[in-house]
Image (cartoon, rainbow, N blue to C red; front, side, top):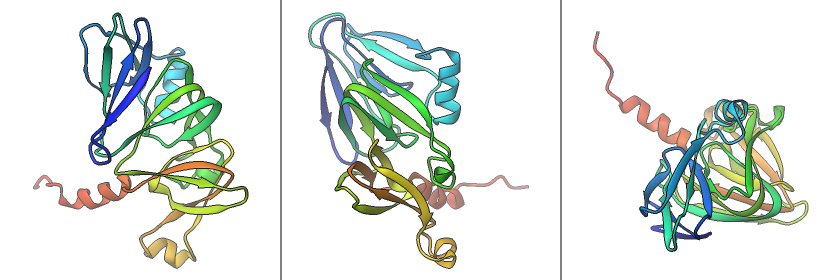
Length: 225
């Protein structure tokens, strides 16, 4: 499997080149185009309960599509729903966590499941659950807006708005807290933030879906009585 990313960072897409018999799993609706030799199989990947857990708790699709190549030079192109960037996050047997909506595709060697985040994530955009991705291979991740990698040293901390989080590796500690005092938190427009403590890598995005929804909602037409 070889992934080629085009049109970053505003309207990125990922072209996934597959060898014969090789497959990749992607979110339902993520496929943009593919060669005629690609076969598609739709499943819950792990059964109904796991599909429900991933969709209801993790915020992802109930079904996943598996795209399998049948001949040389087969490829499938995937793209996220929101305009933004796409990156590959190489896993070598380790675990990373993604916020809802950032998972795009992965080989079958990567296990994707929802993960209890504890009460510390209750007020964050991720809620009480997040996506846990473990295994070996290139995890394909999307963002709303451009994506930036931040590498933290041991004990180093960084503060990110909850709506701008994309993902972090298993060694990064994740804690939701106020941006300042309660007046700043409630009236300053920043809300709650995430305090990240290294060592490890995390990814952030330059745009927040929640902020976009807040901007868009007042502009939507309403039905007159």
